[in-house]
Length: 261
Image (cartoon, rainbow, N blue to C red; front, top):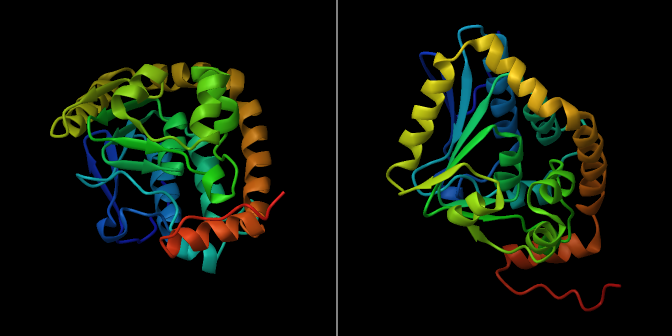
């Protein structure tokens, strides 16, 4: 069984064969820190290692999935190398053997959107607002998004969402192929739990094998792209463009990129 990591902002519970991972840091819109990544990685590893767990569910609070990485921490203590907490989390979610279901409401920013690419079923609330603002922050895509998004929705739409950092709704996530269904804000989590219960009742080895067949043809390519993105992302964190973008974000002003080539 995986080793639990104590982190009050990540609440892990279990009911039957469902291991539920709740992101709970509402005062910061569930922004993710290094300890939170470690706790989520440990919980997913526990789900895979425990034969009694059939499926993992990732959700946030009632009005927010996650605002992505905590910008203050990223400026003060940026991740370093492929063994950083965020990279370990991405490696875990890429290689997860058992199915992952996501229940999304409110903001799902940055990795809050790209982690959905590695979930097997995604249920959104009508109030969900998804965004991948990497370029606007002077960064680049992560989590294999630059490989997976064009496959899922085509290059033009992937470029629109990544390069222009446009926000999109739960309904659009379904239209674009990122989510399975959208429900009223009061229903999305229950529908996700119902889907988890149905998965948990299926033959477990067959479910794992089917997930493996669905993921395996592109897993090596995704892993390679994820590593290349990760290296570029970490390098970009110290770039002048990213510093200007992040300082402007924290100072609540419009960034000025006019001096950059």
